[in-house]
Image (cartoon, rainbow, N blue to C red; front, side, top):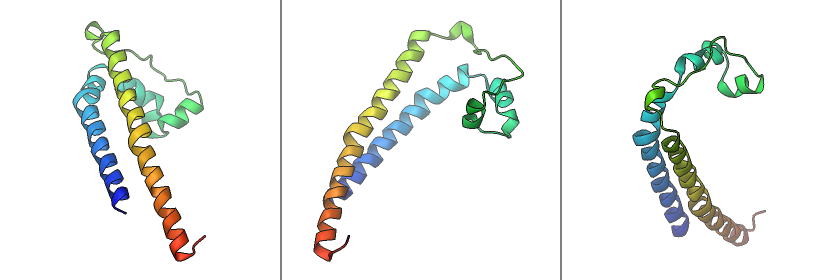
Length: 117
């Protein structure tokens, strides 16, 4: 149980780092360069969600654009995305995998001890 508690704590700590990354870097980037008018039109002003709009090949009545395009740096955008993906993969590979392993081990012990299926 102690190992499981440690694994959960590690996941929480890692999730806090991911959240901090999103708040410090991704949110400001989105606020600076994302076309929210296009998004609103594409999602029919909240009548459908993004996933549904994408799956239904909805056509937005307005053309999307990158606000502040003169300040946009493609390499910085790619680096931001790739770093965030690297962070998420690290969480999945290290922390979630450790949690799953420890959780599985604990369940095996409990099933054996208490004759559960």
